[in-house]
Amino acid sequence: MRRFLFRQHGRYSLELKFRYLISRRYKKRKNSFNIKFYFFFPYSFNINPVSYPKEHFYEDQKLYLRFNTPVFSMEGLASEERSPFLRSRKMLSEALDNPQGLDMDEFVYETKLCGSIFKSVVRDSYYRVRKLLKREEPEKWEPQVQSMISGMSGLALRFHELTTLTANFSEELSYHTRMIDEYISLEMEKYLLWLLDLLRVNTTSTHIQAMIEKTVSGEMSYRKESGYASVSDAGQTADDFEEYAYRAKILKRYTSDVLFFNVRRKYQGKSVEHILYAAAAGIAMVFATLVAFLGQTQFGNLSTSLFILLVASYMLKDRLKDIFRDLFSKSIGSFFYDRGVKVYDPRAKRKLAYVKERVSFIDVNKLPPEVRKIRGRGTFESFLAYTASENVLFYEKNIRLNSRTIRKVHSRVKGIADINILSLRRLLRYLSVQYRSVPIVSEGRVRKLIPGKRIYHLNLVVWYQGSDASFIDRLRLIVDGKGIIRIEKVDSEDTLNLQSAGPVKVSRPAPRQR
Image (cartoon, rainbow, N blue to C red; front, side, top):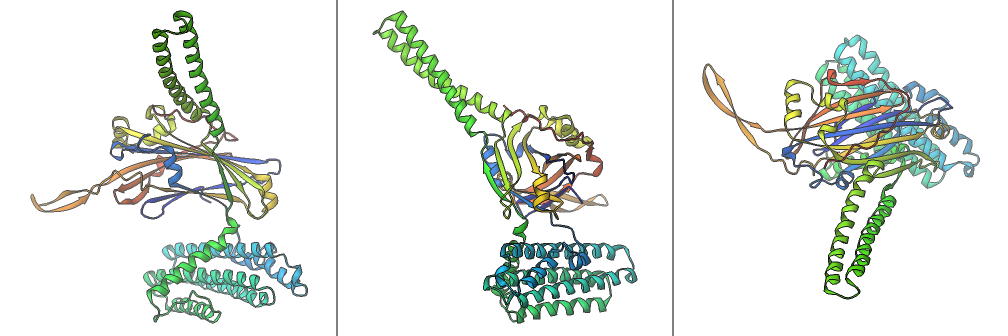
């Protein structure tokens, strides 16, 4: 399982996803992970502490924490005792004689988990088949494709049957089951259609294509007969297709919310900040009072000189207060995180994790050697890194998982997914869209000029430190004024794999850029 994934999330957004494995050792109560992002902004971006304060970063960032989907094979989902499908069916069978004895919350949890696992199983099967199509002969991949289609169709049919059983229970329970049932049908249809497109482009196997088309047609007919809104035919309008896409999205969100955590944010440094600001005011007041006492001793109670001295001391008092406030504010970033995030399980209402975050601009010359090394690899990049002006935005996140609690509450879960979505719209607002003429020369003559778009490079270094692994990756975002053009991972030889030395030691925040 890959620990770090990245992809473009819309025209202006970057998605970074990390996976944290939960220690299965009973004695280990907590797992700690530390993630550091270093954004290297060239001068043309005009990104600095004034144009982009840290509050903007938190506004532009979305943080999602969820469980990794429990791993099942297609056969295991249909037959293993711990399968949420079999547990759901067993709960309904036992409650037929006593409908009041059904635990509604537990049934909703198991059926939503079943829908999420079904989606993962079908997705993984699709990607396996896609790899086989590239390197194997038809006689090797055709049986696997047939087995995949039969397996997912059989699972979907067995879940369709649950809607008949839940008709004997409350309307709420029946409607919930129908929503999961519709989601399962749509997910199977989606991946089968993707597979059909692959087969049409890469093979001439018409009987497999016919098998897929028959299965998809059957699912569409089933949804139409069941009264589900997610149906499509040639006679529908564009608004009907919008409803189809919208419903598929909402059903996915409804089903997968069982994997997501409740997040409660708390700004960590605020209490200390107020105390230090009060201390700054106290220091300034001590200065003003001391000047007043000395002035009275020197000039008496009432005099022009005393009056001027008191006015001057009052002016200096305000300046001293602001100076000390600024100094204390910078010191807070060196010893405290900006905010803490408490993560709770929505079902068990228990605290599962604690996340601490901080953001600052740092001096390029004060970067860790590992970061400087991976940023400056290659002659061209190295020259730019050490001669061109770059501002570095530093973001650090420390995650502490309550492993023992997670193991007790969710025995089927083996890891946590940490999803970061960062909007780059404000970071790119100073860039323009420009073109430069590129000459096409042939046989010593300039044949024509072709406009070439001007691009910008935004380098990102990601440093992952866990109790079981540590690595540094570098990404290059190719951007312009209209957003992200593409994302490139720097060649694998530019990736530093570091040996982990046991538990993560969280470093002090990097010094702020003055």
